[in-house]
Length: 130
Image (cartoon, rainbow, N blue to C red; front, side, top):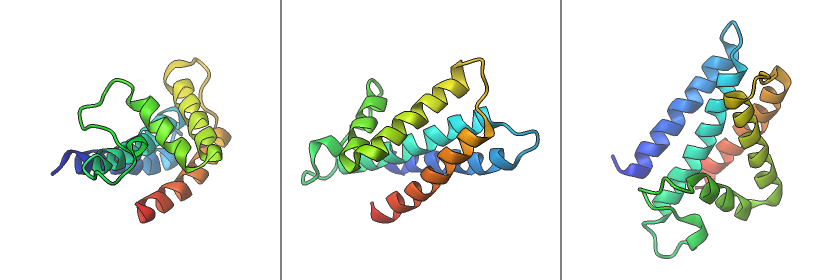
């Protein structure tokens, strides 16, 4: 399995966990929000790693397989090339993940569900187009 396929598999695993966590009782919106962010991050990173193999792809759409430092920034910059509104929503998702992982206040159901609704549709489109 190539590294980009490995990342895609991890993204899918995180996505599966999001689905389980959003229905699990008691609700685990902190963990679900964190996995939601990482699922989107990894699916984009996997595409960027795959793009690195194609010389015709723009540099902004590429990332080396070993890129660890600045990988979140590189993914954000690549997402910004799609649409500024998607970039803003990705930044919001990143903030929600930070809240879920580091802040004492828990992620509320409404914030998680709003993010999930958008990113679920976006993920489906992204996977079908790329």
